Length: 197
Image (cartoon, rainbow, N blue to C red; front, side, top):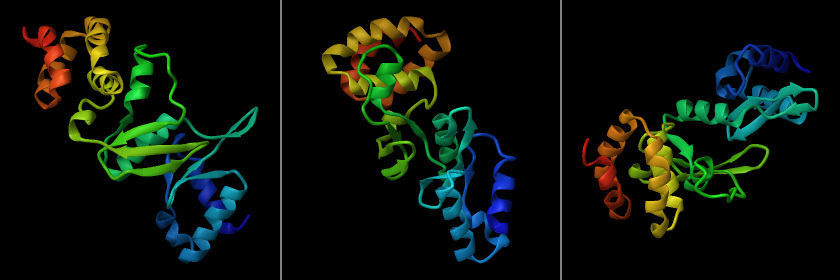
């Protein structure tokens, strides 16, 4: 392994799992082609994974060999790097809440940024979504709203009956505030739950 590769890995191993590495941040170690070649070498050795153009993560050593880092940590890091909201799509949210037993065949996330495709252990789609589908990121209210987008409109009332009673008062207040930006087919069935707020 070259000196540049060694230095990249020495630094990478000091970072928490799922932290991102970008070649542009290592140009002090050598010229651009040499740094890119070092990253490519580390990918071939399964020490790094290329997640997106110019974005890498360190693989994790386990008793089963090299494995990808926790994907949720990578998504959080990408959200911070790109300054975007990135949240699970409606199908993933509905499955998480127990509103469907269908497991999405391909990982899919919604983003406030442009649509793009990540490469993890499988391809992961990031799809640009309207603002209302991104409300309350990483909170119960947002998960419910995204789950409802996956369901048929006829299933919305049953889903609300199942999930909203588990919410805290703060969640109900957040749901009431979000109602103004939601489409009519979600906002109307919400009324009985939030009118007292």
